[in-house]
Amino acid sequence: MNLLDVKDLNIRFDDKEVVKDISFSVAHREKVALVGESGSGKSVSAMSLMRLLPGSVVGGSAHYDGKDLLALSENEVRDLCSTELAMIFQEPMTALNPLYTVGHQIAEVYRLRKGLDSRSAWRLAVERLAETGIPEPARRAHSYPHQLSGGQRQRAMIAMALAGEPKLLLADEPTTALDVTLRLQILDLLAALQRKNGLSVLLITHDLQLVRRFADRVVVMQHGRIVEQGNTEDIFRSPRHPYTRQLLNSRPDRNVDDGDKAFAAQPLRLECNNLHVSYAVAGQGIASWFKSRRFTAVRGADFTLRPGRTLGVIGESGSGKTTLASAILGLVRHDGELTVEGTSWNQARRESGAARKRLRRKVQAVFQDPYSSLSPRMSVADIVGEGLQFHHPHLSSQTRRERINAILEEVGLTDAQFPGLLRRYPHEFSGGQRQRIAIARALIVEPDILVLDEPTSALDVTIQKQVITLLQRLQREHGLSYLIITHDVAVVAAMAHDIMVMKDGDVVEAGPADQVLGSPRHPYTRALVKAAA
Image 1 (cartoon, rainbow, N blue to C red):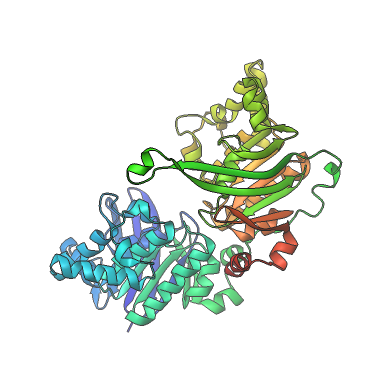
Image 2: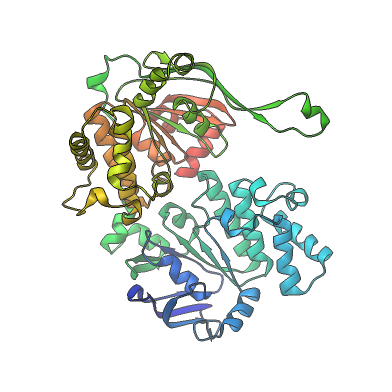
């Protein structure tokens, strides 16, 4: 008998049906992955089981251990969730209470659900943290969520979910916000805890590579329907549905062989020698009043970037790669030499504002999350045209509009596809379309260098491939130089001519992409490449 049997589940918000008569099951001690892109209905399907969808109309049945979750009262579901069901949410920073330590939040589960006294609850909370592999659990239990790394916060979330000793664990994208090596650590941890505690796990994700490593069975969803389900190895070896095959074939293709030949004779776009970036940090005690402390985020970086080429900078969170990007964009002060087409940022700062303005036009950025990097109060015309108003204020409104339409068409957005395109706002577009708008905003001032800070990590796998293909085409046609900051090895494998690996502020390995990825020398690089395989 299955632990969970979902039959003909349908979910409706007002007049919109988002899940349409789906059926699947989870056996005792089984790991099942619910797979699909954003909007497929996978998360709301899982959340409906725990009554976490206010304002929705849910039909069908979901029998858990003989009881229909959808027919129980809210109090009965709450009691069941306190003893047998648990959920790990996607972003622990928003799921954890910022006003309480993680130890307090885990101990609260034991106090409320088990009726234990504060001392016993705290002891068990520390034991749970230790079980998830957090170093120094007794000390970390006194930390607030913002004082932990992303991986540690996710481990604290897992500890909290397991505190109730559930039989079924629902994990909604538990690794999306984590680096590639941390993703594997979290999945290995979940698998180990599943074996130790006899859990059943329903994993909600769009990352098929992680699914292959973790799940016993796969359920594939598209537009609110299940299009295919079966044994994991069978699905990966011989997928039957076109959508499943599309997901499996969504790894980006490498297309950089001859992208820089026509621009090889041009001078260097970017040159960096012995770059250091450090920040003042708050100290402790009276001594800190008289002597400031500094944290070095980038230490002695050296590299060059030529026209039509891409330098990929990879490393985990805290490695210094985003600080490096900020220095290249002229957003942080630095020591050492950093020149953009022969002019250094330090020199430009000493000169007039016009010198800094010229450099800023040459170097533009595309950020990780297009939803947060685009102003929700500005129309597409205002967002894309803002750079023209700043760098080319002499242009007439008619010329500005023509240039905006031309650059939007170049990134694949036209008024024929989206009537009233220039008057629309970011929330009216999908994630991939918003990222195209962000790329158009950067390109409209005709830069020579684009700094791409995790440009695809917030996107589904098929949209990632589309955006990467677009960037590859734009580079070939315009001779753009890219500096791509990412922890996704597959992205740099598809786009980069050269790769630089950073760890704890140091460049531990650098060289041509095929050399660094094919024969990595440093143990850290080997770990990154292995985790992405």
